[in-house]
Image (cartoon, rainbow, N blue to C red; front, side, top):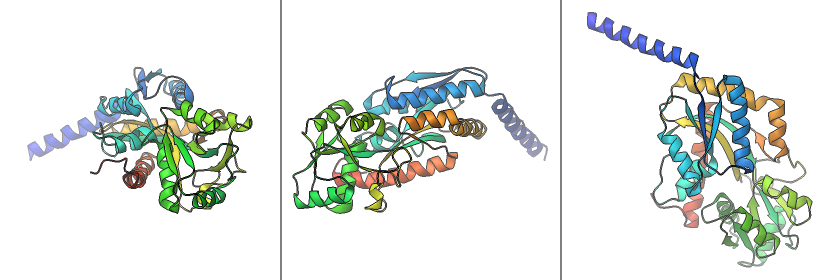
Length: 322
């Protein structure tokens, strides 16, 4: 009986200590791993959130850019970090879902090796085309592809990339024969499209909206589940192909076993930050849709994305069979 009392007291003391530590957290600077180079829309979102977190938490949140291996190096570092809340990860759909899915030897399992904290933004990809491409909307694109099987090319930033899998999803849902042309990066892919070497591609909005305004490219459709408030006059692919969705997304995660109290505190701060009018405007101006979440909503979203893209990637022959 005495031993049981001691054990109960010991567990209560541990829980009290953990709760007290979480209440005081943070007491020193926090490292935010951004698995992409400095500059660009990914780093822009990470630095915006880091700055606001620094202000609200009273401790500096330092951005640590760790690019490489299709962002898997940075994501791997986030998974391996000490679960004390002082190393966080700027997580992305490309790094959490797509890259491990198509890698022969994944460096981590997104559903097991991370503690989801909150989503930050969802950025629907858009389909852009060379001005000479005969289609102006999704119905016309499908009709053109069916009329000339194997004639039209779509560009991507590489095999297994979200741009590539977006085209493969069109093929899966419509049965059209379109040819994938992989490039080594976003700039070469867009340059090839502008030159007319390919006819269309999936792209993030920030990468191409300026080119659309300049008349060098045209928008066919947005690939979100619904129309984007950034370009509300452009129809979504899902209006033609129900259930179609190709988005990039960013969120904040920590290593697995991050204490629930710290996850909860960070979630509350991030939800507040994403709701700030100046943050919403900064993101919307870049074609990004602010979207915070609960930790469970974030985890469920990642699992749905993984299930969907695993099927598409295997159908396209770019995902290792497991």
